[in-house]
Image (cartoon, rainbow, N blue to C red; front, side):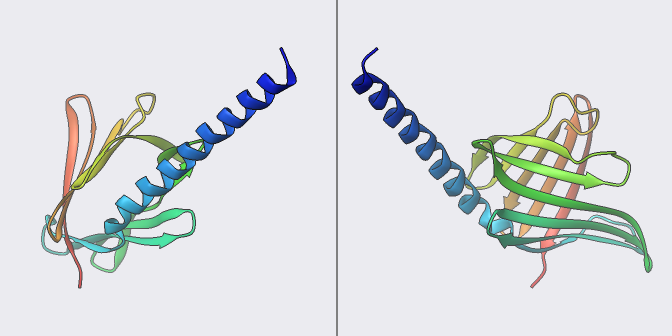
Length: 153
């Protein structure tokens, strides 16, 4: 193979990887509406919870908390970022030894879906925006939980 062909192939490969990078940046920008504090609205009296998301240079970072009175009963650290040419959702919770990574499989103007078929539960995480309300569904087959949030002003 001639040097000219090798250079052309290298140039095309560089352009392809550059466009993938642009796509992940654009996708992360589309998800920017998630930034802010989302208060749980579907909890019984005495319980509260929220997800708080902030934008950073790498994407979005979040924290999810559930409380009973003043006691924190659940906490998770969350990230949405570009990794290896795709957008991923990373969840760190105490009962998992390592962070769990979910790949973005769908996105539109009202939300997005991340999946990890190898994880026990959840396998699918869905975020759906309805104005200043948010629905989050975590599922694995027939087993599912839904959470309702309201954007806190």
